[in-house]
Image (cartoon, rainbow, N blue to C red; front, side, top):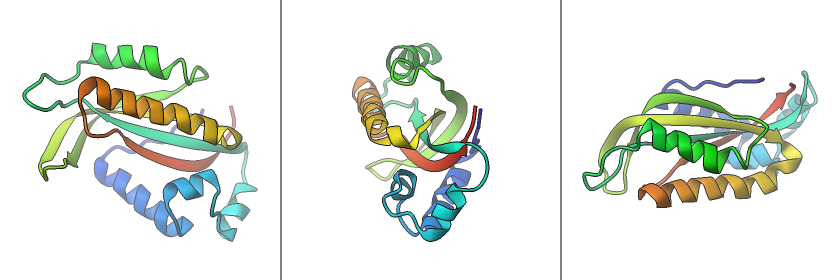
Amino acid sequence: MLHIRISTPAAAALVAVALLFTTGGAVSEAAYGTSAPAAATAQSNEGHGSPYISTHLYFGTGRHQGKPPITDEEFMKFVAEVVTPRFPSGLTLQEGRGQWRDKDGDINRERSYELTVLYPVKEARGRDRDIEYIRKLYCTMYELESVGRADVRVQASF
């Protein structure tokens, strides 16, 4: 299984910037192939495996208005009941420390999780609905502003 690890928020930002410059467009455009430059097309024909999308979701656990953070048990229940049924073939979950600026301009530091799912490019549109459902539900359940998302086109074999 292909595993991509971005260990810090700064590294994640660098990856996103590198993808923007490499593809000449938004990450999701490159991932979904809606504006694939010639170099990206040539690259997708090289190497081993088939074209896949690697989606990385960044879940924070800090809550607003003095509410306690989301516990490991709560998060793992969310993964088991919401994520796994939509991605039963597999996923990768890593615990980390995140930092982001909220809508009020405050910098928040919190325990976080990076969830990675891989799926064939041909399934991208349907999987997008699943991913957006997961993001919205998590925010609604825990009264959060957002769940970060990054999509990368990869070659993968299993």
